[in-house]
Length: 232
Image 1 (cartoon, rainbow, N blue to C red):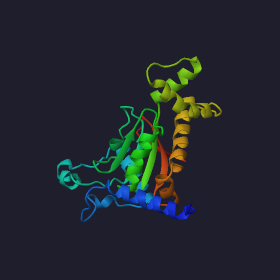
Image 2: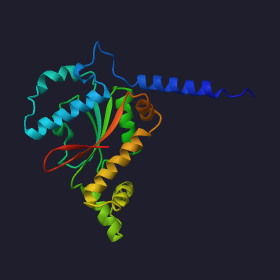
Image 3: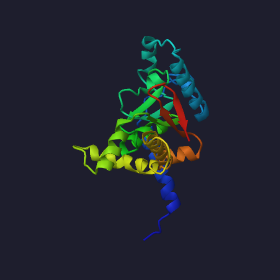
Image 4: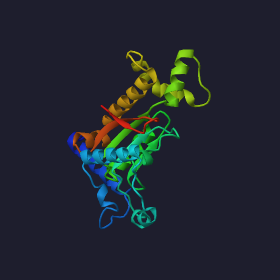
């Protein structure tokens, strides 16, 4: 039996992955549908936070939704992927004064990482060339509150809700060791934990982060002020 060439096998696997991802892309256009979205990771974060500042001040831009339809009909190049809570009071497109084609948003109650949303963000990075990922938590998070109540009462929530509790329990447990508001601390701990999980998600996200093509950041949205606080 011939020895296995691990280096060749690994290289062949990487090439195969690249070809597979390329097959998912839309037909190539002469230029990005939104040239202003072609940004470095740092510039993408700056653009995102400038949008939040406008939103907070009530100075949002007038968006021409009609004229952008043709540009976005065949392709997209969002400048940030956002893992956000499903809470109806949290609307990333509004909070960052953005329009269609800007944000690649994945939403799940409790904004935690699972296989499906990792795959979605991988698509954003590998196919759409998104340079930034934000994990966005928020104040008064119902998912965090439900987890705290389930743990404290030693009760099991109905339906599929226990899977949500299981995902958020590590953040709640970590927050109990901190002084201050348990809900806020747990929400921020959850953001940090899921930032770390995304940074380590192989093979696509971890490699993009290592190559400095993508930056993973965290945010905490205040429902009362609209301010997004960056989480490190």
